[in-house]
Length: 265
Image (cartoon, rainbow, N blue to C red):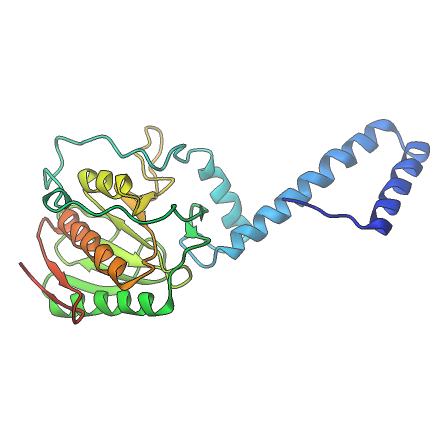
C-alpha cells in the first residue's frame, strides 16, 4: 500500500497535527496516529480481496475476515511438494511416465487464498475458450465416468466431476477453470504435484495441508495450475488434467486436444 500526498494535503496534515498538539491530550493523538493507518490498510486490503473476483468465499467483509483467519495457517512455501503418502491409492502418479517440459519464463504473480488468482500472465481468451471446450468435450465423451458442472470448491467456474471417485475431494471434483484469470485448480497425486511444481506449471494452494487441530477447506493435494498462454501450453495443461482424473478416479483417460474430443487409452 502506498499513499501519495500533494501540496494541499501535506499542508492540511501538518496543520492538523500542530493544532492537535495544542488542543488534545498526547494519548489521544497517539491513538489517532495508530488507528488511522491501520484503517487505511484494512480498507486497501479489503479492496484487493474484492478485486480478485468471485470465489469460494463470499465477497463481503465477513468473508474477508474469514480469509484473514485462514491466512494465519497458510503454507509458507507453496513450492514445496507434499510428503509422500504410502497409504494412498493410486499408489503412484502418472506424469513420471512422460515428464512435463519446463514452463518458459518466470512464474506469474499469484495472490489470495479463496479466491486464489493470477494477477498477470493470464493468457488469451482464445486459449481459455479452447480449454473450456476441451473440458466440455471430455465430459460429454465420458458421461459414464465424468460429469460437468459448477465447481464445488469455488461455487463459480466450469468443473469436471468423477461420478465414482476413489478419492472423494468435493463431490468428486477433478478440476475447475476460472473465468477471471483462466487459471485452474485441481487435485493431483503427491507424485504429480511434485512434477508440476518442479517444472513451473503451478503451485500449491495456501491451505493445501492437513491440519492437526482443525480441518482445512481443501485437500492437501489441491494445486493451482497456471493459465495457458499458448495452444501448446493448453495441451500440456490437459496432460495435467488427465493426471487429476487419475488421482480422483484411479482411471486413466486421455484428452485429445487436436480436435478437443476426449478418448480413453
